[in-house]
Image 1 (cartoon, one colour):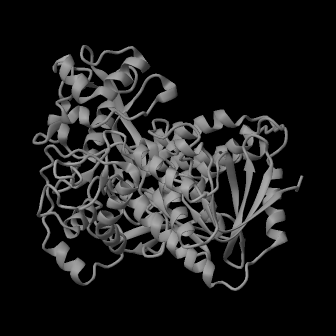
Image 2 (cartoon, one colour):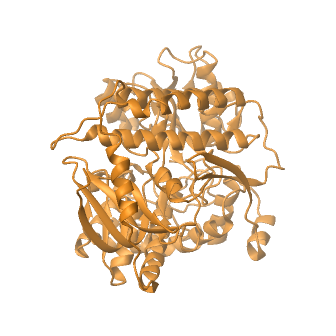
Image 3 (spheres, one colour):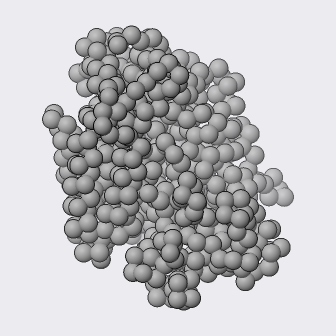
Length: 582
């Protein structure tokens, strides 16, 4: 079957979350045609899960705040491996973009004088996080959707992109199929922007939901000829739910600890005193995640593989006032009243800090006409992401990618086409549609268990190599999976592409983790427990002509001029009281 519809546009955006929408808005404002493809319903992109806020050094409450201080906090908390230029762009441009989205209708909390309210977030020296209650991401997404609607930007959700169309190292579009009808479409475009999110659903405990963040953007990029950077840097949030299984990994906000919640093991000990006696439960995210993980794997956890988080010493009225969402979350999911009983929590895979290697100014990749923005792109967060920076990232770099792709489209004289490339894209779908002995869902589940067990919060060479060999076993089963489609349902077809992407992303993560023989930020090795000042590199993953992954070291981007002066004179602020990450 090689039938397809054809759709032509100036720029194609893949991914209908915040980065994709902001890109498309910029393209449309420049006078070009743009269309957006999304897997999920457009009103329910992953952006809705970003609760806490968006950072901008506005200085509305703390007058001493500045873009320089935002740069310092982000660069140093990323343990010095982020791209200084990308960090600088975010720090400088977020005030303007935050004010813009508020004006468009995001309606952030205001002070009495009408300026945006700002609150503390973890490891930020000053109050610079703007917010809409505890639903900032949802507020931003709704605002961008409204703007896209006003500009008549077509958004096709329920589309699964299987391949980028490449000829002579130039991207000229993408192949997709409709996840309900299996109808295929060839999207021809001057330029393509990937805004597909990360890969944290690869872990058994994950704050991502079913069928999202499976690493498909990384797969598309590698296959097209791009490189990935910092794939070993995966952020684990310290507290995710463990029951019921279908929502395992759902976040339990760090505000619970901020309001006095205590972490306790199965011996009744408040164990943070062994890991960070000064800050206890208000320690940094990586330290609390390591503490929780260690208690569980060393046998001091609950029978459900968790630790206790207890706020029942506070009054019910206090809890309902300060933590209404969490109170309701546990009541609805577990019939548990957290004002009477402790919660069970465990670390959960939360954010992909690595991603596609891009030019920080225009978000271009090493493939002509291909750009990437949002969580799918690397370079900003280094070894640790600060809460509130990811929502700033999608707006700032979404806008820049939209701008750069428009300029690219206007500049080219002719658009490449290749029937051979399109035929091959059809073949790559057709090869999976056949009877087989394996089912895709159990293999996905198996992969998530492997990643959690062998490439979890704390890793070692032994565990990583074992994980790698187990991934190869699943990979060898790919061609024997039973995939049947009909005109009403082709879920299995999207799942096998998800699995193919996940296997490649998992391998990229593990080989990067093996390359970094130290512990730095979110990357923790039990066999190399200390940070090594000599490890001044980024891990770079590429794919060779035989589809094998290659790992190499990329020297860190140098701090130049005033940025070097800023960092040399900076002091890392260790006091994070009242400053929580989300």
